[in-house]
Image 1 (cartoon, one colour):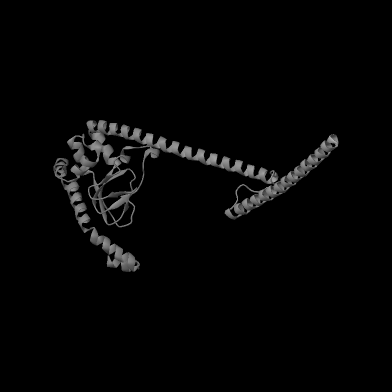
Image 2 (cartoon, rainbow, N blue to C red; image 1 turned 120 degrees about the horizontal axis):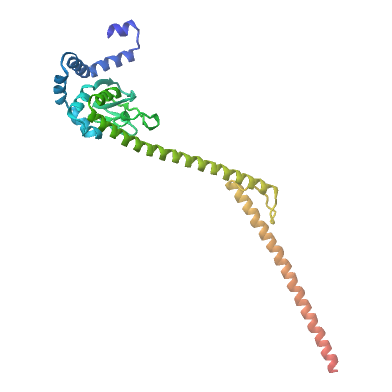
Length: 283
């Protein structure tokens, strides 16, 4: 590793990360060498016997619904087909046509925390239609070791064990139907958002047209302005309206008083004339 970093003149930070990765994954390297030893030198029957005593069987049966009813030999072949992989912190775990079983470390995906024993991708591995596949990739938060099950291995197990193939096919149909419902609901939700945005644009155009008409015409109180006013403009306009109304009330009050005075004068004059007429008649 020293010759590699020195010969390629790698940055010091990258060299430290490489050494840390080698140190953190030493246990992973030992497990991978043991798996290679088993697959290279032992028969299929002995490999199944070894797989029967692995902890991955219980982890998959507890977390993967469609694995609970699989024949034992098919399940052991799935365990034999698991391949170990290691990832450093802040890396994306590729989920293309595979399923992972967490062995060490912590990762996160879509607000969910994956830790030792967690299984992810157990439904996407059954599907073929891209629109129904989730495709979210977990991001590591620490050094992570996973066991990877590829779709190719699962298809091989289905071809070798017809009963397992029937079980996998049934799980595939159920998963596809459920994902299709979710996909249809999401498309309907998006269409509703589009309709609402179009309705909002239509309302905004109608409001703009109304404001243009309001600017072109004057009201009975002499007000011509935009409907959408700021607070300061609104207060100024309201003050003007109140002042105009009060001025008009003062004019009306003055006119009313003048009418009342005229009525009083006319009533006095009529009373005087009536008295003079009465005196003349009496005389």
